[in-house]
Amino acid sequence: MRKTLIAFGAILCLLPLPVMAQNKPDVEKQFQRWIASDLGPEARKTGISERTMKTAFSGISLNWSLPDLVPPGSKPPKSQDQSQAEFSSPGAYFSEKRLQGLAATGRGLASTHAATLKRIEAAYGVPGEIVVAIWGRESGFGKARLPYSALEVLATKAFMSTRKPMFREELIAALTMIERGDVDAATMKGSWAGALGQPQFMPTSYLKYAVDFDKDGHPDIWNSVPDALASIAHYLQQEGWQRGRDWGFEVSIPAKVSCAQEGPDLAKPISAWAATGITRISGKAFPTADLKASGMMLVPAGRNGPEFVVTPNFYVLKEYNNSDLYALFIGNLADRIAHGAGAFEGSWGDVGKMLRSDVLAMQKALVAKGYDVGNVDGLPGFKTRRALGDWQAKNGLTPTCYPDASLKSRLK
Image (cartoon, rainbow, N blue to C red; front, side, top):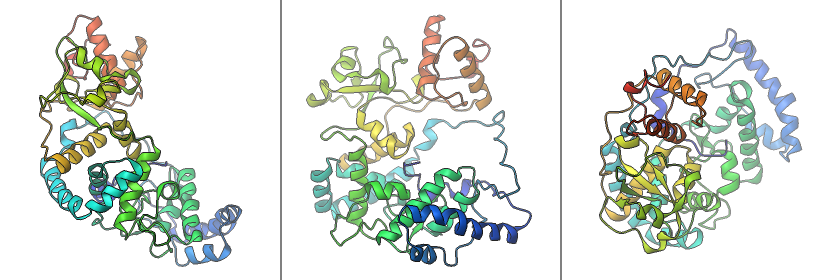
């Protein structure tokens, strides 16, 4: 996993109870043997010195409070039963109180750091408001507590989690950071998932994207605001951010235009979308510079919510966190910071109350009929939404591009 994770504070209360071992002292001994005889040799092959290993793991023990643990001798937890699990309405993601608070603080900080943000935009092409929005969403503008020893978290998960190979790679990257002198073991604080500093980078992302923007000799994403902000911008630039383009536009899609046209693989010039009658909901024209450039339809709640034409930069935001709603949150927050914008004008309909098992059944039925629904997981991603819209149109129904209870009996 090379993408940063959602800031730990927002979801800490949702953590599942950890799996407990029968004999903790014995597992702790196995852990220490693993460090010495398994992890150690691999780390040394990558250039990690014995001194760094000794310093890094001095006093380190397993953190039994973490989620997703599979101690030696125990079995991985069974997949959660989805038969009674509902997925929330997309609208639940956009707390107006939270967005207003982040926007107010973000505007103040954007003014305070205006000179730094201007230099960052010149260097990387990413607007300051986008950088500040991610900063706010990930770590509350650097104010979120990072109470965990990153090495303890990463070592625990590399030794006994359901994703050991991924965390082993991250642990080696963290040791590389210490070896290079970027940070010492005691200072390397992070989230319960091992994400580091104000941008919430995983260690591999730190090695790839972190920059020393204040020129003090090393990238410090914990204490240096210029380094943290520039590192976010560098991340986006390296993932393909297109200089001079927005993230996207809330639009009105006429009823005659099928909602089953969304997705990055169905991009077309924004002028072509406009030619179908799609207009910005603000009443403004699409920027002239964007008309010949590509755009994509996005309808996260189908016809039951706000509608968008997004640019490739929207999908760059998803590289930071692979979620349509996350990218929309960042885009909306950035617009509030830069332009005083408010909530999306389209209202979120009464959606998101179906059981995941019902959506899963719909997905399986669509697959059986030859449709590509993306992940068959009980969640309505864009491929599921457009497959459903295509099926509705072919069966004489008005396309809504979103699962609802009335379709359960029809789609079998």
